[in-house]
Image (cartoon, rainbow, N blue to C red; front, side, top):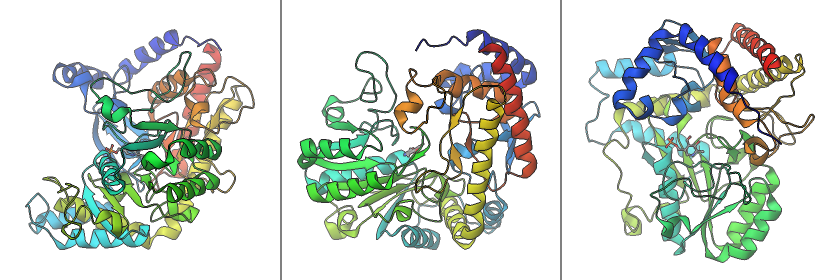
Length: 466
Ligand SMILES: Cc1ncc(COP(=O)(O)O)c(C=O)c1O
């Protein structure tokens, strides 16, 4: 399949956006003088320039130009209740007034309570809080290496576990004769580590069995997202996760569920629970922090204790300056407790909004004769959820079921779904990620109508250009 050239459309949209958000455009020029590419996270740096936020509430943000932008990125998919939810901001405001909030370097009651709710809701014995998902997954792997005395690590192609040497392999789809998800992501990574990272396929239990038959006895761990985020916004199948559980047990490897995206997004706890599968270690982040930088590594006592005194502190994971930060722990505890208390309203509503957002997008394009498929929706045993991605398969009626379907330019027009669509919607004051993104409980009927109008406009534009 020949890759389509979208440069004319992108140039036209860039011009329109520059007129729509001139202050954001000029601040971007200033930003680029000192900040690499003008910011602090590559995913936020939409081309030709990103919206620069001045305030955010609920489903909307306001930018430097005073544009109100309907947001489906929602804090890197952390903000299940929308931006700055009152339940967290009021707790923080009260605490700051009472002299509690910024860093002190002391332990406190709130992290005890945050640990209690996290462990109870996720079926884990012990937890250590960190400040990023990357740190949590890195330590989950180090801990597995120490526990098993082995060096090899298996992960699923397209899985994103953060920017550390074990994570930076097999993330992006690379074209060429050996096309796929098995390449090292960049320079500067020690080959002693990356050579030990083996890549299997997501949602392919037969391939997983073959890979374990070949390498299982050298594996320290298999790390996998029960709902793959950046790799396609797709749930794992029960058969795949069951195979992962059985094979890791059989071969003495540690099973790690990376739930940095999934944890507390589909229920008030871990996603593994919906499959009836308990991993040995699990990592959490994003939603557990209520908008503050909180992540966690949790797991079975027998493995986790290697970090602590009881296990001889064999794994040096002492914590960082800002681990268990007071305001962050207050936000995490408040937010998780709120999700638990309102679980029966929050998650069905998110499922419903997610289903409608997917249908709005697919219908808008179908009306213009453009075949679009969303991921994240109800299928097989999966009830459907709040997080989705949109693809433009080249082949009519093609179902999109694997990271390969989503990321391989031979199968989908990846540039159109990832970049062009995002810019085209931004011109209509809608911010999406991977063509759609996440709904929150703050999104209303009117917001979905606004989204529908934006997709319809873009579909008409695409029809003209494609
Ligand atoms: C599944 C998964 N694991 C790990 C990470 C890394 O987390 P952080 O960005 O907090 O370092 C992410 C971030 O997007 C993620 O989606």
